[in-house]
Length: 115
Image (tube, rainbow, N blue to C red; front, top):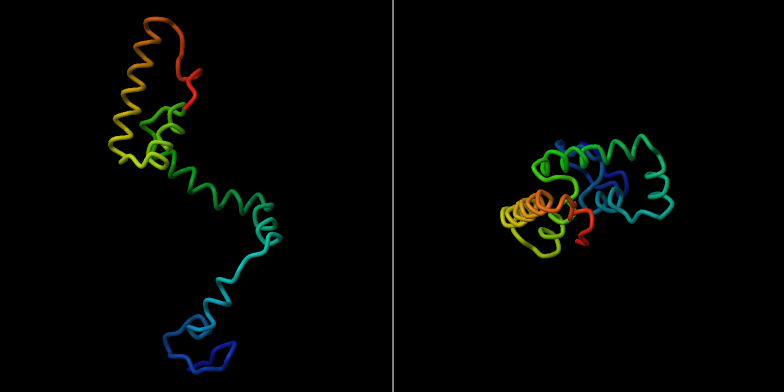
């Protein structure tokens, strides 16, 4: 058995952290300063390691949606609280309407639309 690094309380044999429940949260989840955040995000390797999975997730999850419409899809799901299936139907309808309008006029509407 070991003891807590902070208070010396006896820990069980399965405890791998070295802290008791009272001190574990304070030691690992304490408030971060602005300097700690700035230092963390100023490192390009770390920033890429954190953001790469998010980019990959967005790329695979929204691969059905053209890039020009992805912000609109996100607005529908996050701000307007539409279900993903409903938002997809709305965006697909918008894409179809823009395609028909382009075939008729030769003008791309999504580049002029303010979403």
